Image (cartoon, rainbow, N blue to C red):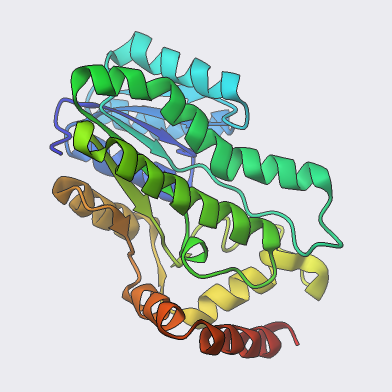
Length: 274
């Protein structure tokens, strides 16, 4: 897909990968609707884009953890720039640890943001896309969605579900003009990997152990590097986007001998968190 002159929407666009995606799509000539709960940083990113090309970026303070929040975002984007050619469900959270320590409210929150937000967005875009015979749904999952996340059941489950939903979208609508891509990065230099208030003790769950595992598993990329890779894959309409080549190697090992892979993950867990 050529994004020049197209309307794109990026959630989680105030920082990190989302902000980098918005800038990359804008550089390709797209109109960009940026969505996030962080209104202050979101406004800064949008203002920077509009300074380069007036009235080409629009910031929407949005809570995509509810269906209505997704509806409001989509309506605002359509009202401002018209038909949405590409929607990038990038917003995500890392929260929760094991079964005993993670309460039901945390499970609901992470399910709503990491999975249901993708479903709600697609639900309210799909009829327009089918009628037009074109549309592009992109989502950010994680290498954890192909493998697993030591230290967090919630993150592992929701990211696996995000990959599964993207696969289902491609299977169901791919021959009807709707393209789908799913981003599965490993370590990226964002607030999720390096939170400013990162806990120092082992009870910190994914905020501590998850980051340590990721950093031990491969290179940590910058968000702009990931955005360039994503854009190249969108041009070619590839489904799976893995900025870290080693993730493909790990995935093959998992498929070839799952028991051996699980044993290796347990050894990694023991090495990182004891």
